Image (cartoon, rainbow, N blue to C red; front, side, top):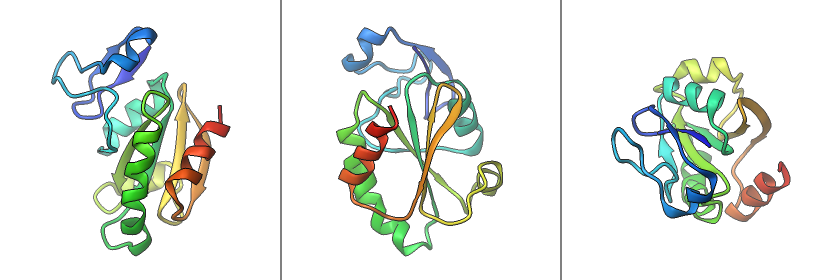
Amino acid sequence: MKLTCLSCGQMNRVPEERLAAGPKCGVCGAPLIPEKPVSVDFQTLEKAAKSDELPLLVDYWAPWCGPCRMMAPEFEKAAGLLKGQARLAKIDTERNPDATVRWNIRGIPAFILFREGRERARLSGARPAGQLVEWVRQQG
């Protein structure tokens, strides 16, 4: 299974049966399936969205956004509940305005689920971790 390291952007190959064993990046040693959401930049997100074989759920947020700040602990809970089924990443839309243009983000918080190089589903607005997890699992 191909996974982009969300810390350094390096592509890694991991046998599917080893996903639960806590694989690490061959370059920087960061966990490839982290227990918490990872902040990414535009280039890393673009690479992961295009090539990762494990679903990637991305939270588009900004530091000045109240609902985004309220959503942060719920998104972190969702990361723990989805460990091994999906990876969770966050991108600061204020620091990475190209991401809002590239994925046509109209309001935040916004969530996009990527899988096998394509956008599979999109959701907006703050919600409890359980709803987010259920939504991801429904997308298959």
